[in-house]
Length: 508
Image 1 (cartoon, one colour):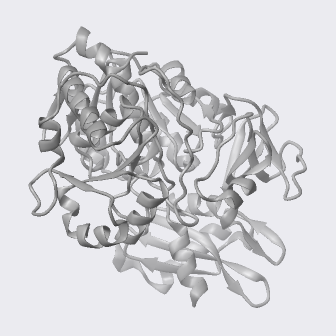
Image 2 (cartoon, helix red, strand yellow):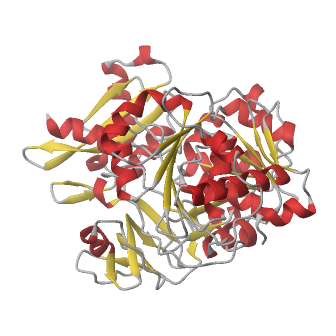
């Protein structure tokens, strides 16, 4: 494992990053030069080792230039979701202690509100010139191309997508590390399990501000490979890029699988995907039938893992393991997984409870000691807030987020299995299931769905969908009602923002 500056010396003209749509690219030599200038600019602005910056921009080359500038100067970098509102952006910038915010010209309209909220935090811009905003590229152009004298590895400080509440950041303590340092979990996933190396051509279809897409794309540069970065995921375009660039590795989410599987057969079979060696997926549970179809199509190259930004543990399942334990997210790679009840007592195999990584790894949520304390059963044994069980061979199965467990008449109902069934129905493009108030039962099951054909949003379709679930699951799990929506609130990495839907119904 090496820093990109090593590859800049050995393979200077090799492309490290290329945008899929525009074709704009960076060689290793160009990335080295630009990240040196960026590191010099950070020091010029007074951002030293252990300092912090934030960035708000769409998928573009400057995004990665800036991350590598921070990385080689010992600076923490926080990438912001471009779908956040100005007050949410300001909250994260303040919370992470950013000394500088760099945005792209696309977000210039938000600057007046951000300036008011952030006070004296300087805001720089990349892209087209914006009146009144200093130009980050111009600042870098004026800087030396030589490395700063106090180089040390920086790190990302990323915030959750806020699927169950306000986004939370994980504290990273500054320690001087060599430039070629790599997180142990990334070494396990990317190198040892996925076989990524200097010959890999990686396709990144997701927003870079999320943990896995950013970390995988950064790791490609450490390996000496090439990453093709999609500006936005489109199912057929993904397949075209796999064929055109002879992609060997990619990291996806289940909603991307669903969208590709719903392409016409003639479209799906028109593209050669045989160069793919590993398709990694995470972020959300993958419906069993969806994954079976993907393995039938691409072969046993799917690798699933379960982890979080907290980096407190990870489970992994190869396709072969998954086929023997359908529905699993794998076995732990670092320490055992514990299934605990609400009294922190360990439950036997097969019993559903709260999922904990007993890895010995600790973390802290920034400025939230109460949330940190609630995440730990004891030191080194923490939860990401999910519910599940272990089978006899130690494979973990997730049933849902603890926050979305429906308690109806004293019975625990886990919406994920209902959602998975609905997603498999030919009429449905997307689905969410959650509890709504019921005077007698406490909660009842509600389904909200997006149809492939909005014209089918009729009482007859509602009755058909309820009957479809009742024929496959216990009647207590069947929705009492189904509502229809034109679209569903999901992040670009496929996480369903169910809290937005649930809050809407509970506020009624």
